[in-house]
Length: 157
Image 1: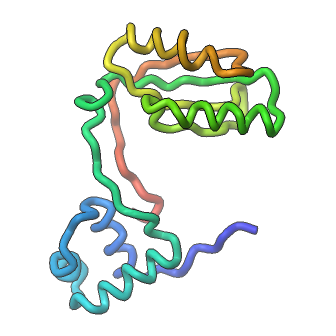
Image 2 (image 1 turned 30 degrees about the vertical axis):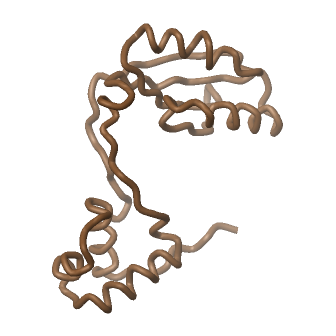
């Protein structure tokens, strides 16, 4: 059974939007931006955390400086789509730090990865020594991103 989304009012949505932009904002500044005093804001944030709508706080890292400026979308097909083969692939791919995201897909391939690399040679090395060595990988297709157009969009705002 799917989890239901708690009902959110305009203030909750504003809190989520502000925290999505700056997870390190002070409670006072957050309260000022949403038009409440600190205590009600703290109660609302705690409720949003308890409901699982805020899963945690993280730093926005500079991918190009840390991992490279080349974003590659990689479509991976497996030999078999059995549960153990999928689990094995997901476990292996989760150990590779250059893989920024991995999605199980419907359609022509099984997984879509977003990989960050410093250059084409590094990507070639990734393909030949990491991805191609994962048991069960049958086919790989790659597309190179030219630029990022939209970041951090939420279905609420």
